[in-house]
Image (cartoon, rainbow, N blue to C red):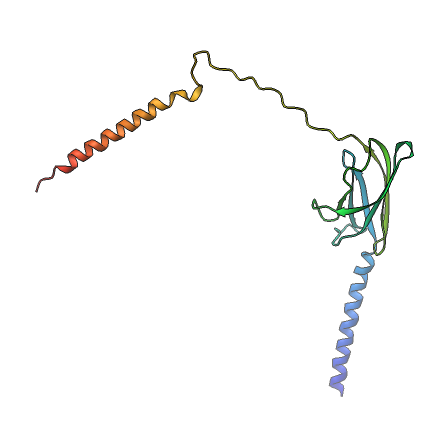
Length: 175
């Protein structure tokens, strides 16, 4: 009987250690930190991490609401994770130009809330390319690469002549 008691005590001790070591990790994971910022145009970016600084290792549900100039309201807009990084979320172009007060909420099991003021700007396109002037050479030639073909032709003639000489002298054999 004492052998069975020792085995049961070891099993219970192992279970207790497992549960106690998992409890602090579960307690740490209950808090979420949200960093809200503008994307430089008409959208919002959110970086979600655990409160202790660890990277977010799962998808969470984030909901954006915003109040803009002249009392405009947007939301609730559910945000989807983006491929740019772990815990990175983006709204896309949802704001019009102006200053917006943006609030992002995360419901249970990882409740969090963050508010930021975002300056939305109209999307800008790159400037048009500058025209490039095309100038022909004054001598009427077709450019810098026009003088290579005579050298190539001369090289081919020399190779053919060398092969002909080799064939002539190669056939003369003394037995």
